[in-house]
Length: 305
Image (tube, rainbow, N blue to C red):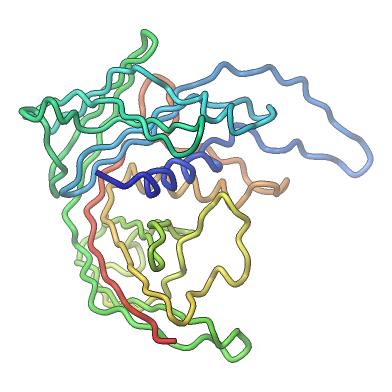
């Protein structure tokens, strides 16, 4: 079971930019254009994952009005409670239990995971297997499916090097050398953990193998970014003295498409000339979000002071 602080980080990260329903109206040089926008009814928002050797975890919330005033209490009240949530591996079907995590006075987070009182149908994720998700909430049913793919990317080595001459000498760059298995259709997502902090996804965290299929390549690993905060130039570097853990996860195409479109929307927020993008979720019945499978490998490096 994940510790409370790590779960708090994951749920908080999910909030930031999970749905961008509208872009800012285009404003011409001489004439303002006003839109009379109707308030859209809330939709179910799903963040569901199953990882190799880990229990499934599902967070359910309701979408918020795009132009509404967002407050901490409003966010906390948007958790969807008392839903029926089932995950199946094709042989076993397990009903997940709702758990609460008090993190401060009057502040409680909620999620669904393995019911410890019903372990006869419980299971953890396995590479190469497919999984289905079924949610029943407020009389509506939602479905999704995902696969935990085989891990086909080999992590050959991880090392650090000094930053460019014009950068702070206390900074450090982490590099990875990896080999992609021949055959197109491999997708990955990466995260980093700095010291005792939780894992955070990179600014652009998902990649396909269109240009590196079957090759050995080297890449800079940028630190994961907490999207609750504005990203600064220094956030592109680790620091001397850091212990860095790289988490590299194989994902299926639906998970790749969700995060590819989601991260594009992060990058385009506030840009009136950007192309509108639809988040490519995989939940049925009009729900937002995704159900994704992860096959993960880890490497850790300590950067000397």
